[in-house]
Length: 412
Image (cartoon, rainbow, N blue to C red; front, side, top):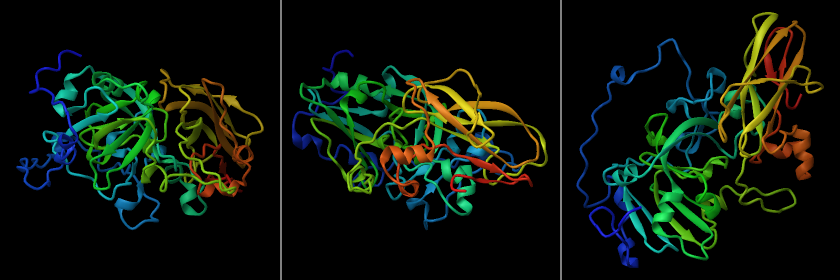
């Protein structure tokens, strides 16, 4: 990547004392730092806002008392295509607040088991070769079965997933510039938030397809999504995609930080831990018609929804209108991207009788989305286990009643 002799472009770190203060220099409120000029208020007309007749918004289950300890879910039922608008991307706030970071002051440190520890400014990152890729992100807690009113909404059950076009630099480029040393096998990524959100990732994945992303859907990554720069780890649980990225340390073992062990580790009923369940299984969900909606009368409809998988690309989505007894293959919107949402569609004529609609996804490796009974059998648990378990990718059935109302049929 060129000579490293000109220290005005990028600074080498030769000793432990030089590391002090590198990461904390990113946040405006750091003591002793000259405050950056306040941003100008955004002109809503100049930026562009939805119609006042459009009430498409993110929603929360309402079980928490503040955004800082809750989730805002994407309104999957109201969207078309595969791209989630940036302002509707789901939010899981693990850090108790969004840091206000001046990009001119922000720095990304890469150190540890490398030949040349380096610090990058945002300008330096943007001068490196960039890529744009369409990837989904999904919270590991997405799709937990819910009873009651919240369980009738595809948004509140399955809305912890979104899909964007992400632009940035491949992490592998930065690691190669630093020179990864023999014996290294993991990287530890840390954010600039107050809690120093930290995640361990195998080096193999870091050298493969992880993005250090500074743009989402053509505009700068939004503050809630990690402005000015974040990781995007395709196909893996979104908790690995560290936001407000400030430090990457190359190491020879996982760090088992609080966010990845005590807070997000699953424990089976037999007491065995399920740490490091990185990859997300094949999943699909019908978004229209879906729970909480109502069909105005019998006749023709289009069944549509989304499918995705951590196993690469979606190869097939099948739809059943008889509760899983028979299936028909749906049409997939082209092109189908790896590690991205895939839109599926199939025509259907409702006779006015009770029916159960559901879909199942098959990915490029031949893995098939299971029913909840099959998923429970695989883990040797009862279906109730999935009320609190992560990584649930079971088939979601929706029951259409004779009056046209639709409800969650998972536990009927």
